[in-house]
Length: 116
Image 1 (cartoon, one colour):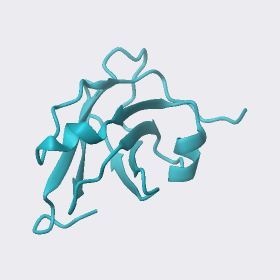
Image 2 (spheres, rainbow, N blue to C red; image 1 turned 90 degrees about the vertical axis):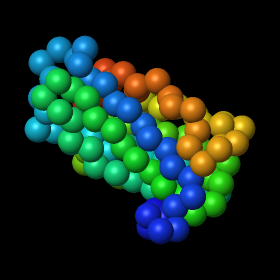
Image 3 (cartoon, rainbow, N blue to C red; image 1 turned 180 degrees about the vertical axis):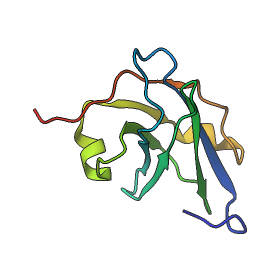
Image 4 (cartoon, rainbow, N blue to C red; image 1 turned 60 degrees about the vertical axis):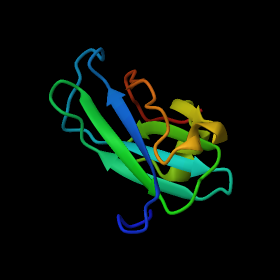
């Protein structure tokens, strides 16, 4: 991740798990941002007691197309890219300014581990 003095482009990813039955805020979620260059940034996010939080990513240069995925806090970035999880794509056009238009909150469903 670019340091704040280097960051020219930022992405704020709002998270909302307020509709998840029996939500437990003590479990962190992992949020990754994967650039089309395969560069991955990751963040652990602890959601508030009302199920809300934000992941913030910074880039020194225009990142182009990004895929943002959310999943279990103990998943590796590689696992998050391959799991059936909550994800959204940020188009290259969205980076016309240093901060793209805010995306809608990523509304969570219960996050569970497990294989195929």
